[in-house]
Image (tube, rainbow, N blue to C red; front, side, top):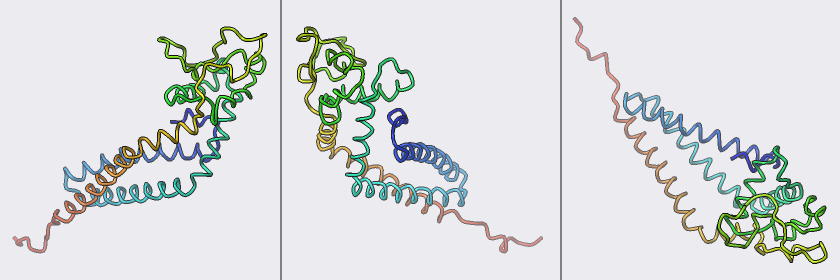
Length: 225
């Protein structure tokens, strides 16, 4: 999760840490809920209900923030991608994770650059090679066992120079590719989100019902010896 954010802005790093924290809290909460249900401990069931409610409200709030701040988020992602492309270096181990993540995105979405292959003309290594190489993960070839990271050399560069238009790469930018993927899979995404919300609501209802049905002993009615 943190791989793509190694060169990112503090806000995205914070978001990644928040997601990790929410995941850890969810696991702990599930354990406490099971413990409370098995041993009929009302305080643990109440805590489980409260945590579920907080998580559900947080998820709804996060969704609203993303929806209303999508332009700012797109601009921030654009800055991150452009910086990553400009400084992409297969020999740089410090950036290996973020570069591998970007190569994976370009391969899976069948895209090149953020807005298009022209973005790679800013890469310092490609500039030094007179654009006679191109990102392997951008390749539009369907050859088997093809390399999907680093740079690949053009077969026959004209006069030892080339431009991005000469590269055998995808023309679509990853921004457009990601938007298309989201539109194509919007139904699945909404279905999964709705399913998670329904499960959380059922967990809240069941936990509060079980909590109400656990009776405390009334020791005032115990016969005195």
